[in-house]
Length: 85
Image (cartoon, rainbow, N blue to C red):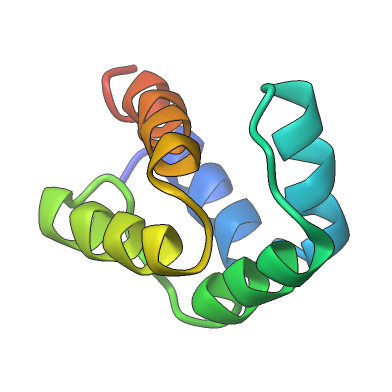
């Protein structure tokens, strides 16, 4: 796995609710504090590989369950930028 992928996956694995809120605001995604906490619980320590399509889709479905379809569509667009690099 290339260094770039390792860095991205490490950041995802350690994301906090406050960081989720910061990134959401930066990219125009509406997320509440409660939703950000739920997203943090979904990813922290789970070693999810967004470069693996099946794992990415599973994560997006879980995130959609605690946020919204619109938020997941934007998140998927962001993931696609990293995956296609």
